[in-house]
Each structure stands twice: as C-alpha cells, then as structure tokens.
Amino acid sequence: QQPVQSPQAVILREGEDAVINCSSSKALYSVHWYRQKHGEAPVFLMILLKGGEQKGHEKISASFNEKKQQSSLYLTASQLSYSGTYFCGTVPNAGGTSYGKLTFGQGTILTVHP
Amino acid sequence: DSGVTQTPKHLITATGQRVTLRCSPRSGDLSVYWYQQSLDQGLQFLIQYYNGEERAKGNILERFSAQQFPDLHSELNLSSLELGDSALYFCASSARDRPNNEQFFGPGTRLTVL
Image 1 (cartoon, each protein chain N blue to C red):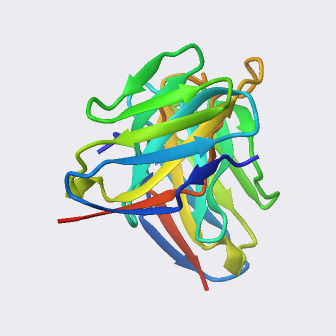
Image 2 (cartoon, each protein chain N blue to C red):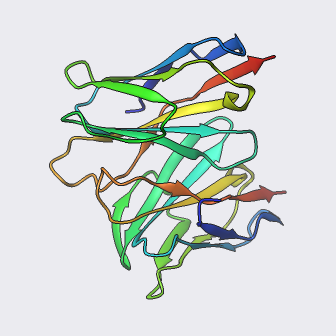
C-alpha cells in the first residue's frame, strides 16, 4: 500500500517555511525522505526509525509518529535550492522480512520563488 | 555524486527488443535495489539483491530479470519491450539489507521504447 503525501504541491517565497506530510495505513519500521530535481536521481535527506532514531541532513528536520504511522518533513527558511519533488519512502514493520524495500508516496512538488 | 554508477545514461530501442541496464554500487555497499519511475506509476520498487542473492521482489514483470555478480555490480534485463516500459530506471545501493540503511541512488537510465 502506497503512503499518501500531502500537500501535492507547495509554492513558497525564499525564507518561508513548509511542512510535508506522509501517512501510511501499515505499521512502519522506517520512513525515508528524498528530494528529486527534474530528470535527476532522488537524493537522500533523512531516515527516521521506530524508536526515535534519526539519520540525515543537518538543515532539515522531520518527525515520525509511530502511533499514527505518520511522518512530517519540516523545511524552514527555505532557499531556492530546496525546489524539487519530495518523496517519502516507507518500510513496513514486517518482523525482519522487509529488507529495506521502499514503497514511495506520490511526491510533493515544492517550488521556491525569490 | 552518490557514488552509484549506472550505464547507459540513455537507451532508445524498439518494441520487442531486449536491453540490459548496468549498475555499480557505492564502494563497500552489498545491497542493490532497482526502481522504475514513470509519470503514471511514480517511483516503484522492482527487486533487491544482497551480496549476490535475491532479497525482495516488488511488482516486477516476468519479462524483467536481474542479477548481482560476485563483484557486486548488478544488471537488469528487460525483454520483449513494450511502449509502456519507457521510464527512468534507477539503481540504489545500501551498506546492508536492513530497513535502517540509507539508500543512495544512481543517476538513472532513461529508456525509450519506440
């Protein structure tokens, strides 16, 4: 089951903040966040694990609510370089058999204007 | 640069043909994942290998197959190509096969089937 991202698109001016949400109907082991610019590869931003551990980007923060199976990505003081499509990828809590297989949301398009 | 390499960058071929996409993981990474990205289906997991063994499978068509070689590079073989197979194919690698491992994506191969 594909996680659902919201909003589908966001338009910001430089310096403004944004929140992107990712929601799953399954119990999750981890949530991975990526940013992709048009025609390029997804770039790893952050991974959040059940139990509260986080690994990733210094300037981007995120949260993971295990009870609700929801994650949020917080982009503060946005820069032009933040423009792109943001994807969350989820790994279900499947007792060790999921092996890191990511199921991606449909993406959120973020546009930052000067 | 993620350290993951993919060749070729672009591939144009005709329906019914067979192609091979190649991926070299980051140095030291044992796990390789293949993803397909198309406009209508988004970013979809195809298959994962870990140290030469298949670990997980997604909605990979029977016409598609993959393998990981002793030097850890991987190949994705697509046969009897159809117009709908046109997409960006990404390879990603991670250190192990665990759901808490970051996955780093290669630049992708753009396949066009005419």
